[in-house]
Length: 195
Image (cartoon, rainbow, N blue to C red):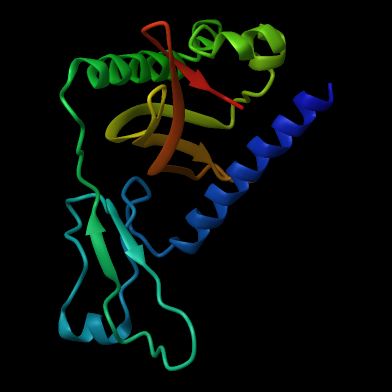
């Protein structure tokens, strides 16, 4: 019971973080596309960071501290897919996509089968399935990078297309957020590591 409560609290914290980010970007005109903030001086000069027809898929480096007047454009780097095309990496991406296809369909019994055998020995499906609520809707993923941590572990980064309703309103926010998951290779198969 404690594990389920702590996972619920963790999920709630993620949702609140998404809500905070959403409210911070409330000046955007289209809630489906996140637009970067533009300073008053940039607006006067007609400058912007991206066109309205393109979603904002950049990682900005914020600047803080004394002397920062906010007049400078933030340094940003576009997020571009950079996936290896070897057989092992393709198998990992196929497993990642299959797991998230099950998440999109909310087929948590199928999602559970992607967890490591050790995880499934420790937690039954009811404990696993209890961590998912109905507050977020997943629409799909776009794999970006694979970082092989060692011979049997990888960190996979991807964009998660998701939406949620702001509590107390009917306003639906749809975003693409950068997510990183750890996957473990065991006996030639890739497994999602939850813990």
